[in-house]
Amino acid sequence: MREWKRGCLLAAVAVMSAGMAGPPGLSAGDAPLSWPQFHGRQHHQGRNPKETTVGIGNVFNLSLDWVGWGETSQFGSVFNSSPAISGGLAYFGDTNGTLYAFPADGCGSDACLPVWRAPLVEGIYNSPAVADGVVYVGTSSSKGALYAFDAAGCGGPVCTVPLWKSPPLSIVDSSPTVANGIVYVGAQGGGQGVGVYAFAAQGCGAPVCQPLWYGPTAGAVDNSPAVANGVVYAAGGTDFANGTLYAFAAAGCGQPTCPALWTAALGAGTFASSAAVANGVVYIGSYWDGRLNAFAAAGCGQPTCQPLWKGDAGTYVFSAPAVANGRVYIGSGDAQLKVFDAAGCGQPLCQPLWIGFGSGSVATIESPPMVANGVVYVGENNERVYAYDAAGCGQYQCDELWQFMTQDPIVNSAPVMVNGTLYVAGSNFGFTPNLYVFKLAVEGKRRGTRAQPSE
Image 1 (cartoon, rainbow, N blue to C red):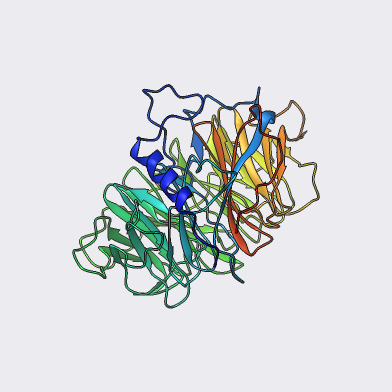
Image 2: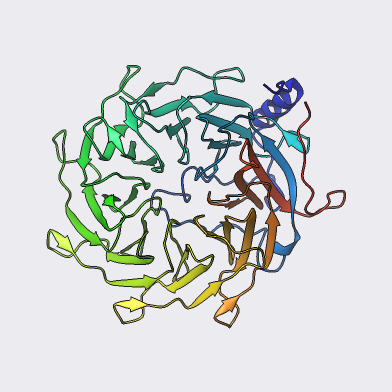
């Protein structure tokens, strides 16, 4: 086990105690913005409309500022766990089952260690969510659960006792979503079975809390529930060929088990592609048929609804869509970022307006894109993170504005651009969880350098 750096911890606590001085681009009176859960907010649009520091005119000057180092282990990779940024800390998990909390502004060194961590043993394949001083994360396998920890930690570097947890639930790719005092999460098994579970965010006053309600689905829910206008949207699939979008009342139905308000058949199973809701439309990818699916968020007045339109997104879709400025961005299995008109094309099947194709080696794009200040960021399973002009380039195929090669062969978490800082969760050759943190280059920082931890 790597020795914990007392100096780094004290520096991080000092930063937090000082109220987190604003990063470049924020005045002293401005509070840093948060990105508290998967794709930013409960609707999962994956856009940061308040970013002003980094844009298309200077994104090429992004430089690696520091790296956060977790615990090296045989299973220390980061798979799908995107950073949550809140209260001066950056949270993510690894497949060894450890939840990490790093100082969001670093620790005064090129290599930082966590302020605190929670070894939960069962693997973490989802993104933490933070609300009202509590951080939530799910763990996988039949012994998994939804955990709630004090977001500030427990006063030491290792936290083992949560504020509360759920009964055993297998939570894999489904990131917790917090909205209006309720935590929603999808399960692959355990509890009452596969489906969507809703818990009181403040807990129940006991170490183990039962759900407020449960929404059964026909197959495992491996995507994060999206919440908008009093409705929860999540997909369940029985196999590669069959998937269903479910819409539940967010407040439940007054009973322990709640039926869906309406459902919609997808052309194939949906896995980590979580729904995004924008302007009255729900967008979600389906895996085996490589489609982006668009449905009316209010339903269709019938128990089963048909899509408004579909987008031809490639060989398969593992990525979740992002929606910004009338465009839908989604990664595809054919190594391309696909961009569609959010209103469709007037036909049942739409082709992309343009595609982003990176200059690195070809690999699948499973990372959910995110959009900030005219730039779309996305990871690719070739060690790289890319930035594209969100408006395109005037051609069908567009090159990236910026790229960085991490030491992680699979970059499938969602990048987060907030407060002029880009956060990417990954790993070091699949054994050491890393938080890669980028800022605009300044004198004394070398672009593209990689920090190494001190032993």
